[in-house]
Length: 370
Image (cartoon, rainbow, N blue to C red; front, side):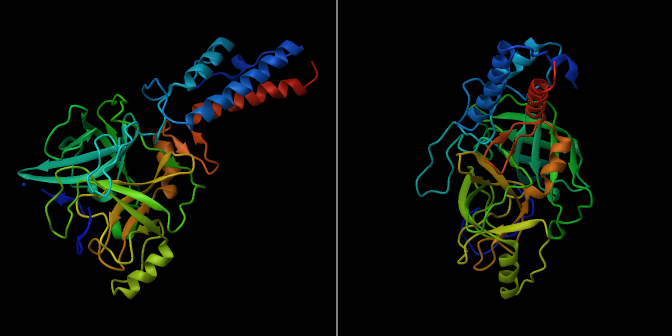
């Protein structure tokens, strides 16, 4: 990652269900009406608080509602406020004017390592839940087996362990159906860890965008990774960061035609980079996240580092998988993933939607004859 005159982005070789009927209670007087109003207010307060910043208590992924009584329901409302919130890093300091990230600055960053013989392949990834990582399809070719991978969360140095890191092997991985090559699109992989990680100040999930979220051209976002800083150069010893503007697929295609490398980009991508080059993702950054800070200060992953004709070349910005195109597929595999909605509210997972449905039924009872 960084300046230079071109490098590809291929992986680098390196020396409940709860019963609704149990949650419905008769509402026959004003006391019950007041209780229902209070429940509604508590629910919206809990979801709004998720957008204010990280919570004091951090645990693993949410669990389904037991649903055996109103007490369970109220308990769920209380614990909603203590769920781990995505896209909210605790460590806020950044090195001014530098390209080296601060430790803990990007707590969702994952180092993906695959060793075969005396060759080590490096890629990036992003933590999206306590047992799941999002990466690129070309980082998980069919010739690789799950047992050959090691993933590092909370890692800062490439070749040196960190006191904050947690290491996991891979249980299995799911390359998006129909993937053939990065240049043909569908360059997405979901990776299931061998066991859940424990969320800390240095290990936290990133939010993913709902399908209706758009990232406008020119929006400044950040890419992170341990990739090379020049074409065919050495990988970085510490986690690097670079800020780049989003370039629409249409604009990028035109730039590629002008640059003489063709403009037939897949439909599921966008680009990011400067017309003059100089800043870009590079070899070894593949699979890593491009994240954008939204209006409520929540970080959301807009893209996955995919490919490009070199890196940091003038007029040839890097290509990224558009995560919104895969949000529903990801959610179908990882129900607990946290999606960021167009309205700026974090849709934590299906559990919160279930709570909203239950509350709606309660209010419906108010309108029915008793």
